Length: 430
Image (cartoon, rainbow, N blue to C red; front, top):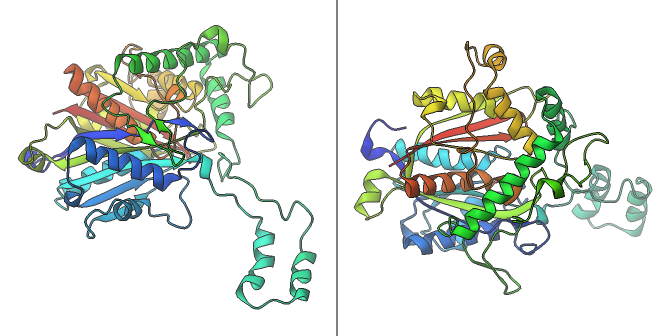
C-alpha cells in the first residue's frame, strides 16, 4: 500500500505447522510451542539469520495467561536478537491477518525492514476457567496463612459441584450467547442455503485440499514438526480425500434438530501455527530474496452481532476492492475462510445480491458472482482446519505462493470473526 516502491512491504515467504485436530498430535504443544515451530521452520527454510529479525507481530485468540505476549516469547525462545521487538494482537479469527497487515503497515511507515508475523492457537491447551465464587472464596487462603477454620469457612460459601467444577471456554458470542454454529444456521435460513449445498461445498473443500497435498502444492509452506513425544508430523491431519456428498449427508445436525450444519460441513477445532516473513522491497532485493506478493489493500469492518455475526466479509471484501481501485472481475483468486459452509455460501450470496448492495453497501448493483473455479482453490478451513489465530496467515501464505506459481496477478481474502468482524485484503504478485 506504500506509494514509495522501495518502502513497499513484500511477502518473502511463509511457513506453517501441519494443522491437526485438537487433542491429537499436538496435544502437548501449546500456542507458544507451535509458534516457535512455525517461526523456526520459516527461518531455516529462508536461510535468514534470526538476528536480522527486527520485530515479530503475532495473533492469537486463546492466549496463555502466564505469557500472553506470544510474539516476545518467540523471540526469547529462539534466541533472536535481544532487541527484537514483539507484540501480540487479537481480533478473534482475523487475528492472523491482523498481525500480517500490522507488520506490513509498520514496514511501510519506515519503522522496520524485516519482520515476522503470524498466529497460532492450541484448542487442546485452552485453559479451564474456575467458577468466580471459588476464586473469591479461595483468594484469602492464597494471600495469607490460613487456618483450618478458614478453609471450612471458604468451603461453606460454595455449593457442591456448581461452584467448584471448572469449565472450558465456549465458542459463543459474549454479548448474545449465540454459539457460532447457531449463527451459521441463522445465516443459512436468511440466505436460503440448503443442506445439500453445504455438503457439496464441504466435499469440494476436502477434495481440493487433498489434491493440493497430493500434487505438492503445500510442500513450500507446510513444515515437518517433531512433537515432544518424538513423532514427526509433516502433513495436515484433517483432510479426507474420500469425503463425498453421500457420506456427509449421513451426519446429523449439531446445533438444531431440523438444522443443516453438521460436523462435516463446519471447520473442526484445530491446533496449529502459521508464520509470514515480510520485508521492505528494497531490503528483500538487497538480501537476494525474490518477493512473492504485496498488499494492494486491506479492510476491517464490524457489523451488529445480533444480526448475522459471520457476514462481515460481504462488507469488508468490497471495501478492500474499492481501496485497491479494483472490481471482483479483476481478481484471479478468491480465498474465503470457511468457518462453516453455510457462512461461506451466505457471504457469496450477499456479494451476488443487488438488495445487499443497496441496503448494506450503498451501491446500486451487486459486487458480483464469485467464480467457483477461482474460489478456495486449495480447500479451506472446513478441510484444512482452523487454528483460530493461524488461519489468516495461512491464507496469506497460500495465496502468495499461488500467485507466484501461476503467474496470476491478484487474490482477494475474506475472513469472518466473532463480534461481527469482517477482515479482507487484496494481494498482488510482485
